Length: 182
Image 1: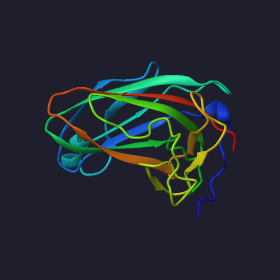
Image 2: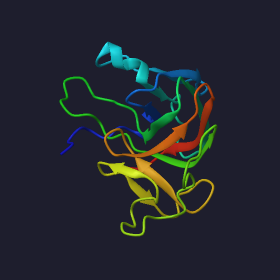
Image 3: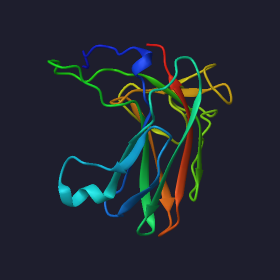
Image 4: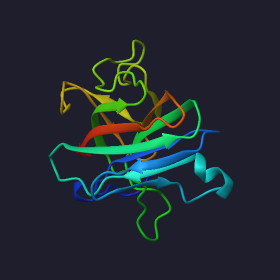
């Protein structure tokens, strides 16, 4: 159970992680004011297989568009993870729940399913079709920036989807994001 404090929406950033077990990934573009790079934690030999990036602070109550781009060194599958930032207050054990909405996820250079989140999973209505959840992420109705639905996520409550990539073909991921009310 997460008991960390909830951050104000002024501190919200959107985070996109990309990982693969065996395909080297190279960042090729980052959102304005943000970053996108290979991870800097964990086993150094495995860092080349994962990317992480965040937007700049998101303006309260307003949808913002951000783009993350990368180039895979081989054909295969990579996983996209949509989440909030990793934030922990000093002297706190648990990570803070910084909630963020995502909508209209568009990918060029690969095929993504249900990037607008308009289709709910047939068995679990709080999950978008084609996306796997981690933690307490949720599909939310009537909150979308481009349609009716969006997803509401935080760092440990996120949605993931595996996509097929092609060697040396740039993949661009463009998202609409905004801070979510807690």
